[in-house]
Length: 440
Length: 130
Image (tube, rainbow over all chains, first blue to last red; front, side, top):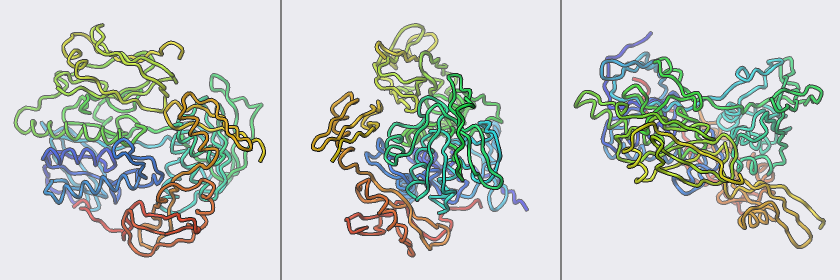
């Protein structure tokens, strides 16, 4: 029983009502355009709703808020803007089914409780977040009984639904949500046997190792992984093994650990399946498409922001990213109405990264933009001292000393006015590099 | 009191120094820190570590079985278990707003608990795909 409505027209459609999407919508509202947020859940806030721990918004608000408090501020700002006459609409319980380029605009099909609905828009901002890597994606051996959860699933079960997933827990992977859930399980009276990480370093932030594991005496086993799951109906035990330098498990040192629950915190994947269908290649280091500093993809009028673009470590950066996309999408939408859409890509050049940069956004620079771009990047290895250099055509326009770089931490670097002017002026390819300085 | 050694990761900056904190009868030595901030942090960690307590409480409001809450200000880490046991018995039966007081003076140690989200009966407050 589908009910296909007539095409509705909106200036900007934002897909996803988490921090990136709400920030993008607020930016569109501020610029005076009309915006519609599409959210699949019943409430805005995205994953923040289940992140009840504190530490959010330190950069943006100067306070350590909990996830729901941060989301609450965003939603309050949205409602305030609505009462002031801002054309911000929110549609919940609505799924994006497909999107396609339709002449000079985008056509979006949604699945809602009322059926299928089509919307036309000049600009689409994808703020779809990321999803967790599962047991299938890490080739975990053994049985598949009940009791295997991703950290985010367990977080939702405990914090939103009020259900304990288990009482005797092993955590595989040292991502931030895994560390936070290890503490959450202990606080709720469960036993956490340990956190096992195949790498030789932790993948979560140092503060989470301190406040989630050390505070609660939860053992951390680096260079160790789960090689097999045992259990008929429910998880009964896991086998853990240390690994050698090449990641191969040493089965002679295997240990069987009785437990009823295995929690996986083994990585996050930006959610881009729908736009991948449009033929947009994904950057293999970020998992998102290549974008300009405006978060515009190589398809004019299609923007990607937040964790769908690259997995950030701080929500403040996610919101900043959403805001940049929303502001640019408004500009794109209003110029598209008046003239043939001028794509920023006409004046955009690719940015090459080298040295110890592991991933970076933006991957393209729109050199016609007056405002200097902000780079977000991660390094491949820990370095106490390093030098960031930015050059074009072999001419260096910026060089900066950076200290205490750690792979889990994202680095935000705002290019200075003078360097940006030089970068725009010089010809040739643009490159950004991070090299370890002496003694690092 | 005997000699005691504690390992901590300093969280003052991203460097994350591995601190070793030695506690003797009347004095504390911190090593492994690269700056004076690490020493202050180490001493506080060894004497009276404090954290914000964040958890959830049970509700009887349809569609939202748990309400997230936090302590107002930080609490002693060593009091957390006791506080959690008392929080276990709290049931919220009325709608509350983010920031409202949920429980006062927990365990008689002056810890107040506030809601970190609105609690209201489930129902769309936005359009639902029409």
